[in-house]
Length: 121
Image (cartoon, rainbow, N blue to C red; front, top):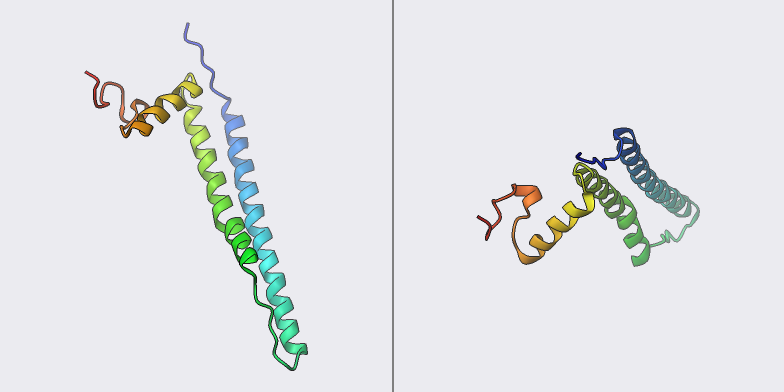
């Protein structure tokens, strides 16, 4: 009478695939934007006898960093964590069984095994 609430593997694979597509799209969007900016800089330098180049603003550099590195890594990390929690019969129970011991500075039972947490016999 064990009730399994696992998501079908096809759904999990679809979720991971969508996460990868989103990460790839955001990285390619940032790369194409950078390529467009470098092409416009080259065109400006070729047509401008003064040699004036346009500097990237701090906001532009920050957005490029977020789109190229932070967003793809975050999406992949979340897909892995969601997939790991979906292995359990009660994913929300496993989540809270991990969060509270980690907040107290202990290794949680779903990671190290039951009965191995400090303070348990």
